[in-house]
Amino acid sequence: MSRLTLLALTIALTTTAPVLRAAEPLKALLITGGCCHDYEKQKVLLTEGISARANVAWTIVHEGGKSLDHKVSIYSQPNWAQGYDVVVHDECFANVKDVDFVEGILAAHREGVPSLNLHCAMHCYRTGTDMWFEYIGLQSSGHGPQKPIDVSIIEKHPITNGLSDWTTINEELYNNLKLWESAVPLARGKQGEGDKPGRTDCVVAWTNHYGPKKVPVFCTTLGHNNDTVADARYLDLVTRGLLWACGKLNDDGTPREGYGGK
Image (cartoon, rainbow, N blue to C red; front, side, top):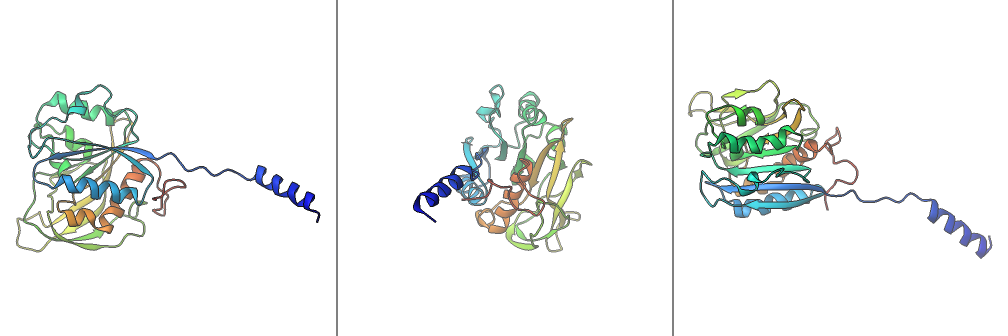
């Protein structure tokens, strides 16, 4: 083969080969802050851990100090979630009881913005109505002492496909007062006997579909302590929850093409 023919063949192959472009990162908004947790460290553990596993770019809103009644400023902005693919609620503001304020949060999700809710987000926004609990799909009112939790996968689902049962360090097991019909439990947690009845075996991870548009929501009550948030098993679960909520998770639990980690 002459050099001229080889050059022509090389050019032809180069110009006809498909160009594989990386997917645009998912734009995630993390809302964090409030009582009782080390959110300063956990926001780093969470965002870096997820981005190592999935193609996600983060915007972080961290405010409210250690208060229980802070109203996160971004929620008062019109269309506060516009431009984001997913919102991660990792805040702890149980004493915010303003129904109109909470409605402003929920409106964004009801209109189509997927979300994750982590740990104390389940205990936020106790308005005296079920509005927040209906959104997350489960009502919880508290937890017992910190003890190891035996986590068992109970549902075959893309989020749990290939994940194994595990035991946490000392952690808070949130009780379950009510599970909405729209919610699908994925994992249960058990602690040792001797605590209050009905609080030693509870759903700890689930999906929900919220509102008329059935917008996807993933929740886990795990994640009080830094070592849990840093645990690869926890980060695998939460990352899959995020990808599922965004429609970027394969049935086998792997990210769709272009949405894997760094």
